[in-house]
Image (tube, rainbow, N blue to C red; front, side, top):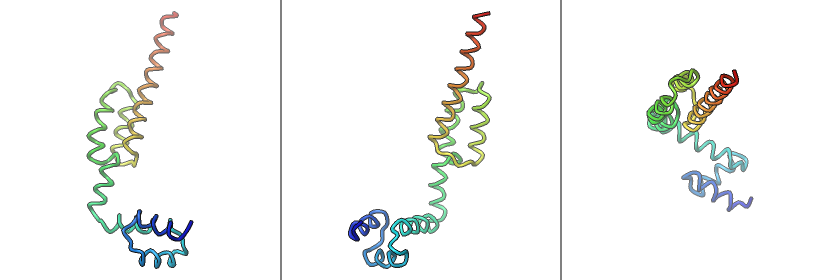
Length: 125
């Protein structure tokens, strides 16, 4: 990559000026990824409580997910796996909302397939 391209890419990902970017490039042996990683880790650590709140808000343990979780888990209370995964997710494991939704859909579809096969077996007998 050309130096201008790298400067513009780092500017787009950080709020560093050209002078700071050039100094960081020397410090990190022209590794733009390590500069961006350093910036992101510093911004999360420097933000303190507000950053951890926003990060926790997107995780399963956060308020926004907990509000969405019961409606998904509540759709299948008779499913044995659904209650366990929802309570396990709420206990603090770091899964995204999307992972939780798809896990619940898989459990629902698995249970539907099992009950369908049982129904077909009972019809045969």
